[in-house]
Amino acid sequence: MTEKVIYNCHNHIFTHENIPNGYFPMFLVPALRIAPLRWLLKAVMKLVIPWSKNDRVHRYAAFLKAAYRNSQEGNLKQLMGYYPVGSKFIILPMDMHYMGAGKIKKEIDEQHRELADLSKDKKYSDVIIPFAHIDPRRPGSLERLDSLVNNDHFRGVKIYPPLGYRPDNDILMKDIYPYMLSKNIPLMVHCSPGFVKAKWLTKQEAYALTDPDNYIKVMDTFPDLRICLAHFGGISEWRRHINEPRTSEKHTWLKKVINFIKCGIYPNLYTDISYTIFNFYENVPLLKILLEDEVILDHVLFGSDFYMVESERYSEKRFSIDLRFALGESMFWKIANENPKKYLGEI
Ligand SMILES: [Zn+2]
Image (cartoon, rainbow, N blue to C red):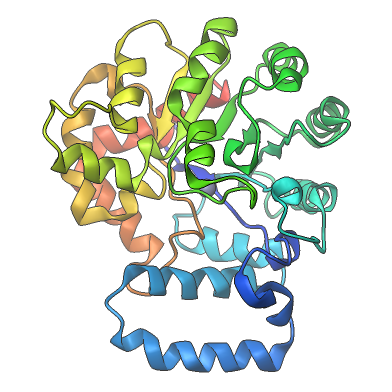
């Protein structure tokens, strides 16, 4: 029997060069490219962080640290270091050009190119599973995807609707999804109310674009397309799910995703536990109970959302070990090996 390896299905390794200048307030993105300013901020954070109980501060600090590593390769090496040798990582690029937050130093084609080069490097060719970020508003989406799939062996597509478009956008429905079916590659979508949103959208508008219900039309039109609604509804929806009585009128996104999976109409729908399960002690009990249901267990993917959740207080290595211990071997390997292979079309 060959040894089983971990597939982490949700990771980011892009850097500050791929983030728009107006992503953070006060022109922090370009300002922090100046080393002395970066050192100053680090010094301030070093003073604040040991005193802060707020997880957000810890995550912010870790995010900045990762985003300002000098290359995608630097982030990849950090990620690989948290997992056993042989582990594989789906890498999700981000195209933030159309969110209205200003100039980007290295646009998506350059980000894709660097990722393609890394994935062809002998050191990483068995490690990286590259996905293409497709924003349907960018001209030439289909040609871009076709080239990445054929020439660079990209193996899936990532979309991010709160950046300002619907998942049933015309280009996606007419060009991208049919193409993906012809190549047998899956879709990864951001599907949690914790999002980066286009500057001109209100929170409610971005929420409406991200809603799991928007995928009914996509799934009905393309029943064979393998789709992962990432984050299993998201942290705030898990909190709502646990804290509000069942009679609550508005279904949580967690409940919506569970209903899609359980209804039996959408066997090619998956979800991942990335980000959400990083609130480990809060959410792992419910996750384990949900996974006792075999239909749900068959459709959940292991993912972490590196480096969005990197935190000095709770390392990614500890997270994956804690999760494996909490779920037990058979459940863990199901979501970290067998399901990812099905989602990717390897089996
Ligand atoms: Zn993510």
